[in-house]
Length: 400
Image 1: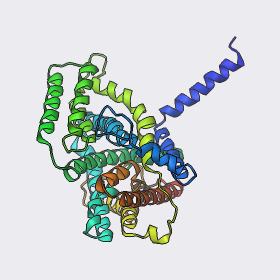
Image 2: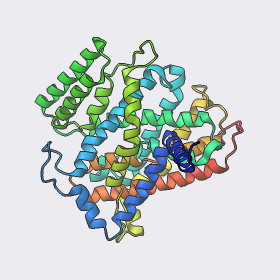
Image 3: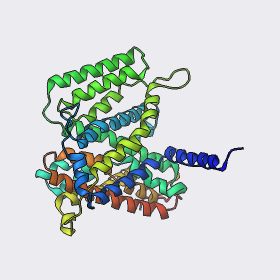
C-alpha cells in the first residue's frame, strides 16, 4: 500500500502538473513577476537589481551582448520570437488563420487595434522626438491577457478566448513587421547576406524533407548571430527561422514544427518571458507623482493602450457586423466583446520590448515608456476583468 507521504507527493505533483498545463498559468506567473520587479526596484535592493542586469559582464562569448540585460533582450527573446513564428505558421497553414472566413474578423480587429492606439499616441505625444514610440501601445500581451481570463473561469465563452488569442497572434505578426521595418539600424550587408544564406540552408533542409531538429537548430543559431550583427534586431531571426520549419505530418500525425513548439513553449512561457518581464518591468517610483504620470510619453502610451486598443478592436467588430463583413464571435454579448477589447490593452511584453527599441540611447525615456506601459496595462487589465466579471453572455441585438 502506498504511504501517505507518497500519496501526498503524487497529489502535489498532479496539481503542479495541471497548473503548468493550464493556459492561464504563464500569464499569472507574468503578473507575479511584474509585481516582484516593481517591488525590488523600489526597495533597498534597487541598486543590486540594476547592476545585475546592466553591469558589463567580465567576459561574453558574443561581444555585442556584454550585459545580462542584452542577453535576455537580444538572445533569449529570439527564442520567444521563434516560438511566436512557429505559432503563426501553424495557425496560418492549419489553424484559426487558415481560411479567409476564419481570419477575416480577427485580422480586421487586430489591424484597427494597432492603428488606433498609434494614432492616439501621436495625437498626445506629438510628432517630435517622441514620435519614434508610436508602436509601443500597438501590441497585446497574449500571456498576460490569457492569465486575466484564467481568473474568470467559465464566465467567458470559449469563442471569446479563441478570438482574443487570434487577435493577439495577428498583433504579434504586426509587431514583428514593425520592428523589422521601423526599428532597424543601418544595415551591414555582409552580415545580412550571411543571414540570408543561413535561411536558404534551412529552406533547403525543408525541401529535402529532413525532419530532424539538430541541423535546423545549428543553422538557426548561425542566422541569429548574423542578424545580430546586421543592423536588424536579432529577434527577427527567430521569426524568420521559424518560417522554415516543416509542418508536414508524418504517419503518426506529428511534425517537426509541432514537436519544436511543444518542446519550447513551456520554456518561453515559464522562463524566457518571466525573465524578460523581471529584467524590464522594474521601474523606480521614487519622485513619481501626478506630473510624471501625465508627462507626454507615459500619457500617450497609457492612452493608446486604455483607449485606443478597445476603441479600435470593438469598432472594427461593430462595423464588420453592421456591414455583413464578418459576424461577432458566437455566444458572446456586446458587453463581453467590450471587455475582451479592454483586455487587449494589456501591452506588457511586446510594448516594453518596443519601448527599449524606440529610445535606445535615452534611458530616461525608456523608463518613462515603462511607466506608461505598466499603467496602461494595469488599467486595461482591471477594467477588462471588471466588465467580463459582471457581463452576461446573452447576445444583444446591437452594439449600442
